[in-house]
Image 1 (cartoon, helix red, strand yellow):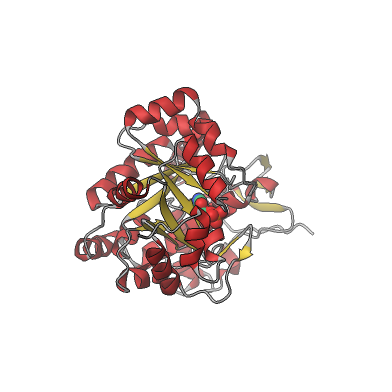
Image 2: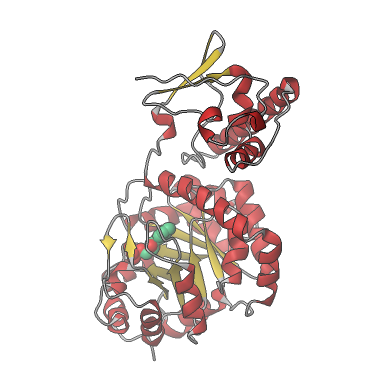
Length: 396
Ligand SMILES: O=P(O)(O)OC[C@@H](O)[C@@H](O)c1c[nH]c2ccccc12
């Protein structure tokens, strides 16, 4: 039932066969056991890299300098813990990575860790973020930041996302539309079988959308960066929002290189400092930032950050999928609404908008733009879908 895996501390990998069996750890049904002396092999990314080289058959030696490694071990765990502490003080419940912290128990020469629920995502947002972390690490390896920066430099110049929203609002007197090119979602499944992203984007533009949002997450939303690029290259003039789960600054450069004019930063998964730092990078490379909030705490955090011009209020709770459009009103009431007006921030009402009454309701609450996917993408003709949503033709 429980498996015990041992390796000696002064192991020299070139003395072992190339099979990983001898020097990897086995997560068994409930417990992971390993010799204490070797704990660093699993603990450090650099060691892990060396380990995988060994599995390729190349010869490597890992010097056993336990004191140095232990010091690093402590440092790594401290950094992790302090990040968790910061997130906690900011009220962030989403854990950015599985908590593979120090072992819980020492038994004689072994350490053992209960393979507890802590290493299982607690909700869909956490699952998405953990997957994204791995996905981004793999993409980064294929396209390091240096080459990506060059691609960013030669990308077509960014379009004015906020300018397009303002112009539309002024023209129609109604919230500017950010229409979303969305094939599927974890909560609703596939929204449209005959999904042609370019055709849908063109239909949105024709119907009077000010900007477009393009889902690029493949695993949960069946989106792609190819869709973003294809829409950009098809002559669509609306500025494009790259709808991604951004967890790493690398993704900002990637989005810009693929033709995005704006990106979404989700306050539920990013600490204040991440939002500040990423906003600075976006400014440098010409990307507009839309910061998404879902509750009062996230709104208050974001209102403390300088330079935020666009805030999206998501009516969908990404942890439970519950949608409630009164959330927009709730977050714009009283002092918060006042502060937003004073700062000249444009608020975008996001998710769950289906009817002219819904649009009127969030407009009344104070939004100057809306982000809509499902109700438009499901329409046979998305152009007509826009007129139905607004109760009139807004394309003229
Ligand atoms: O399809 P809807 O209910 O109109 O929602 C669109 C958009 O708000 C939603 O897709 C969204 C809002 N924030 C997100 C963050 C990630 C993925 C998707 C989203």
